[in-house]
Image (cartoon, rainbow, N blue to C red; front, top):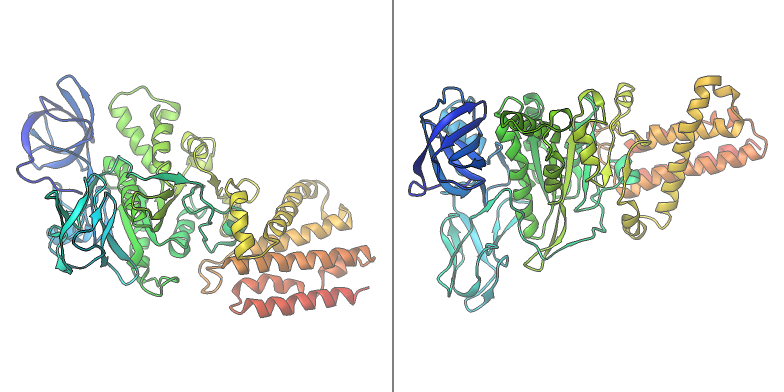
Length: 586
């Protein structure tokens, strides 16, 4: 969180009333979204409503003990984040206070109220390597230097977007703190490594382009059936225990994004603890370095103040946009947007606003849109290209997808990964229901899969979709009359669909090999099952009974492809065995 200096702060308001996280003050000289410090302890808050001389504030900390008559101090600046080297491998709360620094200040894991700290270390020095020389002309957004922030990521020092630009008069390599000047311009402007940016304002870009490259997740059901583009948006709704958090963990670990911003928005403490404990120990499969070297965590658990939960998604998306401006592909995981919406509902009720459906504020859809629309594949103002992909988990009460947060999210996002409690109970993971999920990016991403994987990727995938659709229809008949009453060709279709479900769509996140499946392997598993399908129907047409076709020794080996490291050799041998064993039957 950007810190206000002592000269910026002025005592010019008095608390009039306190209602949970909502505080009203009179005679406060402030503007909308200004940061203020409330009460004698200086609790951080944000102006959310102004009516006459009455200002309404949402406070980011517990307000017990705050009472009418206490002072309110305005900073004159909106809620902003500190942007610069030091954000990666960091764990923040919802307003970008580094939790390790707060713990050190308190000497305890239990944080006192009113404690604050800069979002990035102001005293640490970083090695600055210039990318410009004296006499060069720079404009807003231009990259003026490189800082090796972590072994995986080079931090690109940029001219602030609100700068006037100019000619470089002084620049020198060396070790600097984030507040020291690294570049001087002829206008007298001094460029530092540290920037500030208001969290509720989107960072500028030249153009938002149509994404054409997939965000490879390593999860077969996602890459194979419901891909998301780099710069795309996705929602993962599902009831408790269906695997939302594990799915997002898998995406954070394996998605081919340069930077991962993980926002734990109101989730239970044990789930965030798992993230905080696991991520520092994980190896990045892309670089071989620590995964945290390219990860920024924002931890805002369900027992933290509700107003901070409302702001944490904006903190996360602003950090993501900053790395996007450097030309990086960023994946933002928000877990879960339902808790964010519940925070808005609580604050709205305390403001006595007219409620919408199920008590959520009438502007729920607008706020969700504002958040998801900051995703995209962008041409940046410094002629680089970067993307922000946003994947939001939704926790509908009782798994009811008709509730307002899920429905409003579905109107906005282009990829829908519906988690199914029945699949989770059957231990089918990822428990993504292939009959309810969809991706609107599929056709625009097909050329990439054709060029980089196989020419017949779209046709083979469509065969798999048709087979699974036919299985869903046949299962309704099976429920009534039993499988044996079906014609032999339909019995065979059910068997093929079973292998698609078990060998292809099912994946073990805890197996060292099966946890990640590259697109080539995803295709080969799907194609191996199609090879069995084609050979099996040829045998059926030749008069071989369906029982003999499904009893061949080679077929069950399809279920073991996922755990094979040298899968190409295994699949080649398996396809030969399947074809030869079936041909021996006729």
